[in-house]
Length: 515
Picture 1 (cartoon, one colour):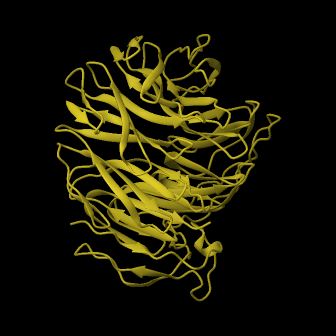
Picture 2 (cartoon, helix red, strand yellow; picture 1 turned 60 degrees about the vertical axis):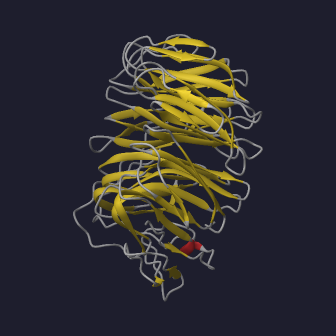
Picture 3 (cartoon, rainbow, N blue to C red; picture 1 turned 30 degrees about the horizontal axis):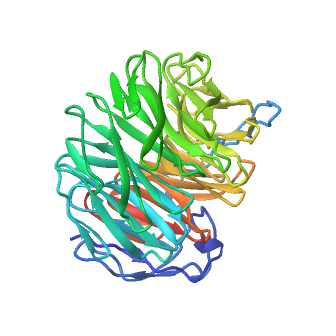
């Protein structure tokens, strides 16, 4: 049986308890938080866990610091400062942390905030215990879980969906009235309680299901081709229209007709409301093209991000690709009509990973790049094999800032959530990473979180992990201002002094950072 090791919510809502901090001197035990023992033989520690932020021992010399950020006038960034000694990952104690998992690999699809808590989704292959609610898979290799937590971290409800074959949840979104959309893939047959769906071929088809606030299915739809299809992203607009995006090969059969790929793997975009498909489109070239993320603004504009390996038309004129792969952004109106699209990149492989709208209508884009990347604020240069970038676009579509966190690392920021007029971003890195002026080192892939101000400057940040690969996959800002992180880890992981132990291979972690 799985058990959750977690900390009680800290009464200290100040800087030491607000989240991840690097190299912050803490005297006494101001950041201490009680650790509640809810474990079995997997073992959690009972006592107090200090919010220690003392830097770990240096492992190797750091790389040169990141160059200064280019201004919006197109000026180049300044030269980086001399690198310091690299340090181990460190962070302050979170307000709350837990792990969930069975004896096989468990995965996560995303997290979303609702009025009175958060909802997570993912996939599991063996019985999994969510605070006493045990879900048992009926299929092989995996079924889907959807779990709601209240703002204190207690499970409100836990639901399981799946058929006799493999099923995965890969995306989640919430409608303005509190309903929850889940998207993913399935093999064979699946029934969410709204009628059975059968895959067209012997491979994965995609599904979208809408749940009410209690986790009960209201409607579901499925579509696909006779090859492998993947759904990567969901977004819900103010009218409750759900946009689903992913990739397919060959011919994809939908309720509105058939989409035909131009060659290789192409992009599909489908718009669904009340279970009815309003429309769908395919975009692509003869090479690989992927839509990784969609987001909808308060006025109903939907933005799609991803990458293309060949010339691509995203509803407008064909756009050329300069390198091995280029980043794209495309915007569509409330009726699904094309508004604008752009492709940008350097001579290497550049990929867009995430798009998110902020509280003021600004758009955050994240991704990875090789060599040099120019987004209109001055060139950014990757120190190692690849670099990660973050960029902000205003409501007028013009770039406001772009930044490349320094260091020599492989990884990127796959999660982001607005906090007032600032941003929290999270992801994973392997190597050395500059976090707010402190170089940290990971010998395996560790999770990293940064807080950026409205101009892209890193205010604070931190990282956490263990001997295996650890990653932040998704994050959200709850109604009380707390930020919740969802991801996976292997073996053991230390989250700000809170030890988490995996039962099997990869387990799920859920962490709350206080406002």
